[in-house]
Length: 218
Image 1 (cartoon, rainbow, N blue to C red):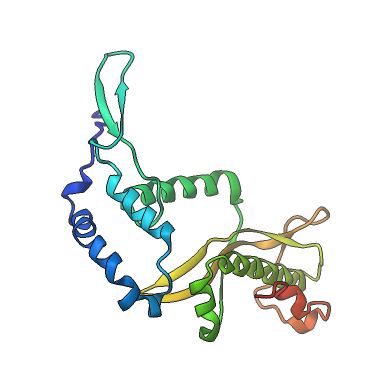
Image 2: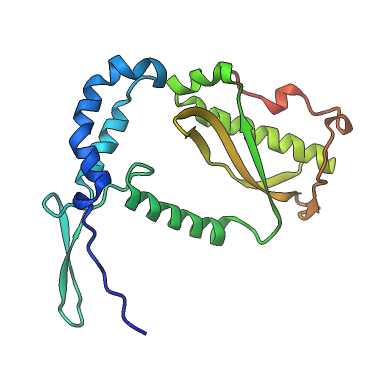
């Protein structure tokens, strides 16, 4: 088997990097007039992410010298921006590491389900201008999921295991959506593996109220 050889990436020669480098400042200057009304205020954090991406993987900025203690071979490793989504390299690394951690440390070897929670179009703009509401949307989705599981197994103490990321945009359109991957059973101290039925009627459990499903006010 051939040995793995580290190959230094060269982001400055990619079309993506060159496009951002050549056009971002112009985009930043015209954003308020041309795009702010439709897409919301251009947050300073986004600007920081972009500038950090332009410095990512470039040796002339900051680098570490890596030396093998056995053979003495050395190479230079450019620092990375460690940002999600905008930087393809750093985002992919985070996705792989998060997926590995999720599979080994969080997710159990049981059947899982996919639950999607969204909000009506009429109030999505509030999430566009106030991103802190996205965390509240995740909480609401979690409370709704717990209520459904409690109704399904007829046990108020049943709690599913779940991973709750929040998705925001899709195909240039704004979405405030929470996608939850949850175990197909609710756990409690007495019966940790009780499976939830595939079809749940809220009428089976009169104790489930709107206040349980949406406990937060925006």
